[in-house]
Every structure is written in C-alpha cells, then in structure tokens.
Image (cartoon, rainbow, N blue to C red; front, side, top):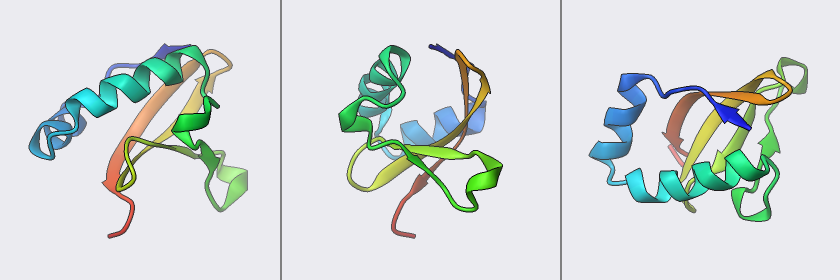
Length: 82
C-alpha cells in the first residue's frame, strides 16, 4: 500500500501531541494491510463518501480515503473524543 506524504499541518499535529512514534507504527501496519486488526479500520458515515479511519491509539484516529486500490491519502488526524 502506498501512503501519500502527510500535509505539513498533520505532521505538526503529530509532533504537538507526541504521536510520531505511534503514528509511524500504525502507518507501517497500514502499509502492510489497511485492515490489520490493531488499526481498527472503519468506514465512516455517511458510508457513500467512502471515508475511512484507523486508530493511532485509543484516543487519536487518522482519517483517510483510498485514492486508488493501492494508494491511501490521510486527510486528518484528530482526537476521537472531541
């Protein structure tokens, strides 16, 4: 799986919240298999938009979509509970 480079604002968010190592680990799993069990990948509502999320840790999630069958673009990283 090819993962497009993160927008600089998302990289800053990871740094600000000290998530770089956790994100790198989960990104490696995403690269192997976007439905790897520890990612807890889910299709978000409304489902027809085909926007997905995966877990960085219990609090933070990354939002992404498939650009092509083998390419992912991460469009947001956020606190799942706010």
